[in-house]
Image (cartoon, rainbow, N blue to C red; front, side, top):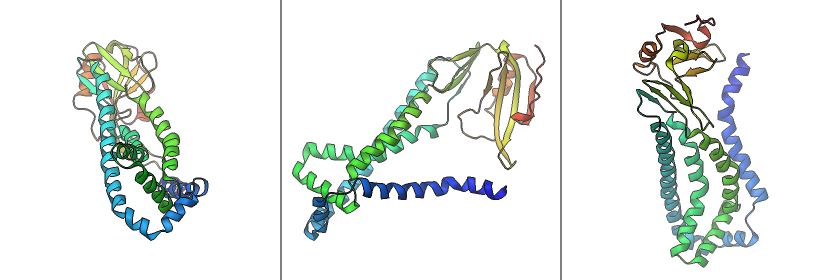
Length: 273
C-alpha cells in the first residue's frame, strides 16, 4: 500500500519530463524541418550570419513573454476583483487563490511569444530575412517550431482558457445583511440570509490518503437547504481562519461555533434553530 501511494505521489514529477520528451519526439516526427531548412542549417555561413539575430530574438521572446504573461495575469486578477466589488459593501471579501490565474498567462506566454515576436519584427524588418531566419531556426531545432507552437496553443492554451475563464467571477462576500457566494462556472450568485444557517464550524485541517494531518484552517457553514459553504474553497492554505470571520458568523447567525479537527469530525446531526 505504501509503495502504491509513493508511486502515485511521484507520478506528477515523472510525468512532466516524460511528456516533454515525447512532445519533442512527436514534433520531429510529424512536424519535421523541410529539406531546404536542413540545408540552411548545414551552411556554416548562414549559422554565423544569424547567431547574433538568434540571441536578440531570444531576448525579445523573454521580454514579450513576461509582458504578455504579466498583463494577462493582472487582467484576470482585476476582473475577479471587479466581480467581487459588485457585491459591495462587504464585511469580508474572500477571493480565490491568485495561483489559479497564472496557468493561462504562463502557457499563453510560452506558446504565443514566438508568433508575436515575428509579427512585430515583420512590421519593421526585412521580411525575406525574417523568413530565412525562421527556416534556419526550424532546422536548428529539428522541427517546424512555428507549427508546433500553433498546435500547442490549440491543444493547451485554448483548453486552459476554457477552464480558467469560468473561474473569473468566483468569490464570496459576507455583508451585514447576508452571504453571497459565486462559484465556478456560475453567473448567478447564491444568496443566503444568516438566519438560514444551521451550523458554523471552525475546522483545523484535513487528512491525506496516508492519514497524515494537514493543517488548513477554514470556517464551514451548513445551511437549511443542505448547501455547505467552506471559506477555504479555492483559496490558499492558511494555519488560521480569516481573522474575525468565525466570530462575525457566530454573531450574525446566533449559533454556537463548533470546533473540529477535520470536516469529517463535525457532528452530522443538526439541532433545529
